[in-house]
Structure formats: C-alpha cells, structure tokens
Length: 539
Image (cartoon, rainbow, N blue to C red; front, top):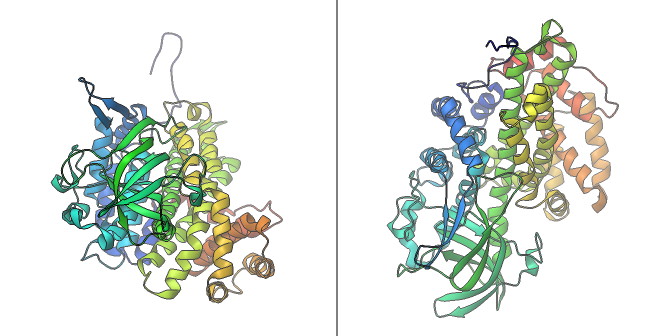
C-alpha cells in the first residue's frame, strides 16, 4: 500500500479463512482418543465454516451491537423483551444447528457425544463467546427437565431436543426450538445462595414468586430455573416466560448489565411480581438440583476459556510467521520462539486434560468416571479460567501496539476472559469445593493414587510434585486450597501427556509446570514439534 508520504510494508494479514479444527492437532488427537472420532468429518466442516472471515465478522458485529432492553411498546404496554442484532441470531442458529445445546441428551446419542459436543463448543468459542451462555444453560438444564418438566409443559420436550433456533416471542409449546436460562444470584448473597430471600408461596399446583435476581442471564429465554425459598427450604422452580394460557409471566426486567466483556449476551436484573413457578423435585432440594447443573456449566466455563486462549494463540502465531523484525520473522527470533512454544505447550496440556474430563462425563454412569468428574470439574474451572487472562495478554504482546487496538480481535478476547473465572462460582468457591470433595468423597485418594501411579517413574518433576501434594493432602488447610487445586490440575494434565504425548513433549510440559526451580528452556526439537502441531501438523 502506497501513501503520499510512505509505503506500507511488513504488515501481516489478519487470520481469516482457516480451519479451526484441522489446524489444531492437540484437539484432533483428544477427540479421537476420548471416543468421538466418528465426529471428525463434521468437526472439520464446522471448523472450516467458523474460521471464515464472514463468521468472524458476525462475532465482531454481535459484540459491537449489544442487546437492547425493550421495557414498553409504543402504546405503553409492558413488554420486557430484548432486541438482539441479526448477527447474534445467525450465530445462535449455527450453534443450535450443530446441537451444541443438546447433543449429549438425544435418545440415540452415540458414545462419545459429550466429547464431540465439547469440541464443537471450543470451536464456536473462538468466534464469539457471548453466544455460549444461552447454549450452556440450556445444555445443563435439559437433563433435569427431561425428568421433571411440569405436566402443563410436557410438549416442550420435542423443541428442547431440536436443532432449531427460534427467536420468536411466543409460548414455548408453539416454538420449534427452546432456550432455558437460570436465575440464582441475589444482591445480598452472590455465591451464597442459601442467603437468598426470594419467596415462593404455594398456590394450587404452582407457586407464586416474589423477590429479585441480581443476575438473570439471557432474559429472552423461554423459561428460567430459579432458586427461591419455599416453606420446606431453598427450592428450584421452573419459571416460564409465557404461562400456559399465553399470557406473560410476572417477570419484570429492570435493566441489562453493562459488563466489561461478554457484551453480545444479555444479562439482566429482574423482579418477580407474583411470578408463576412450578416446583422441580422436592421442596428444600434446590441446592442439589443446582449443583447437578453447575457441574456442567462449570466445565463449559473451562472449555470456553480454552477456546478463547486457542484463538488468541492462533492469531499471535499467524502474526509471528509474517511479521519481520531485525532481519528475521518473529517466529524465528529465539526469545519469541521460546514464548510461543511455551504457549503452545500450555495448550497441549490443557487440551489433554479438558478432554479427559469430557470423556469422564461421557462415562458418568461409571462410579470412577463420575468421581473423576466431580473432583476435576472445579479444578478445571479454577485453573483453566485463571490461566486465560495472562495468556491472552501475552498473545496481545506478540502483536505489539496493534494487538492492543480494537481493530484486532485480541482486546475483545481479553475483555471476555475474566467472566469465566467469576460466573458459576469464582476461584475461591471452586477451590473450597475441591477441598470438600477431597474430604467427603470416598475413594478419591485411591483414584488419584491409581491415575498418577500409572505414570510413576516417567518424569522426575512429576514424581516429586506428586509426593509433595500427597504430604499436603494428609491435612489440607483451607488457606492452601488454591495451590492444591492448581497442583491437581498440573498433575492430571501431566499424567495425561505422559500417557499419550511424545515423551519429549510430555517431559517438557512437566518441567515447565512442575519444576519449582524454573528457568528451563524448551529444546529446539520440541519447539519445532509444538509449533508444527499448533498449525495442524501431525505427530
């Protein structure tokens, strides 16, 4: 490009028209290893579509055109609707068409369906993370609703399991596809849901809810699962947007949240004015119901953060292959190559760990798999989501000043990262949950001894870290909960790499993550291997 005063050169092209699945060797390996190899062709197709400039532009448009609250219509009638940009609807259509909201819950779901769905989720996260919230909540709520959906709403089962996205403002029974939201958090309590004050009074076959929710995500959903205090204790209620007679329920949208990131997704504050709700399960059973769903939403937080990290790294690596400085491409500069290799190595371990967790959820009827998922879900939510914020900042630094400007994708990814650490339970909540599992779940130490014992002797850093953690777990202290959760993640990821990755790659990961002395370099052969795999290379 030639200007009057200068000629522009050495400007890398943006990363468009790449295949998000085929370019990620660690993801391909994990999908095949965990039993979803049957989905590879579709994943490649999804990866190709999502990597286009057109799809990425939809993500940008949805983010710069946030939803609007429509509280009243032109005549003054109360609406309590949300208007979203057309780009949002197109992205949601793609997510539903790919069944990211219900793949694992179909009657004829194949073995490995949860793993396949997790891979699709990671791919969609790289385009626009705001659309993941309604999909996550619907996915987590569907198994509960399949068992407990109130009688007046039994015709919802079919649209719940459809592949259609239907944004029409209609009663759920008249729609081709449905979204389910959640309403848990109140002003006075935050994560402490037992302090919730919203009341539910029994009125015939239903309950009348009076109170508020401080965070009420995706208010345009067809129904929400809401926690409220009934006479028997904290309970879970099905609160539809429209009642069976077609009238609007008494859920009043007060305002939409003005958030740091996640701007394409509507999060609201609501008041319940004698809103009708139907009890799910028994009174006093609300926390148990929420914990079931919370396990699924927390895994999605980790998967979403991983997808954002992968996209940030892809943008940085593509830039480094094109940008020259001091007579070499950035990727060939020794210090930059070390930085990029360490980022690639971090993603290798993270991918292996997360898809081992997804595989455990696929086999959740097996007691050992269920126990693994119970322990490592809060571990994943804490460790992966925390790691995302500095990781994207590092990717931004690879691009330099242009990476800090809004024309780049990276500022949006950076603003998006903290939400996954906060929503569905912040870091401290996750780490306290890890301690709770270690203290109360029978057989958890035997599970760890078996899993980590399988790779004993393969790496001295791993062996030493596991011995040290065993000492700490004999009498864990609450103040050490973060370090315990962090070490559990590092050991689980390291063990998975020692089982399945090349020995030099696995040992490099263990040295980087478990060697307390620090300062080690990744050798040139492993660097080449990592950066090749990060662009789709085999091996």
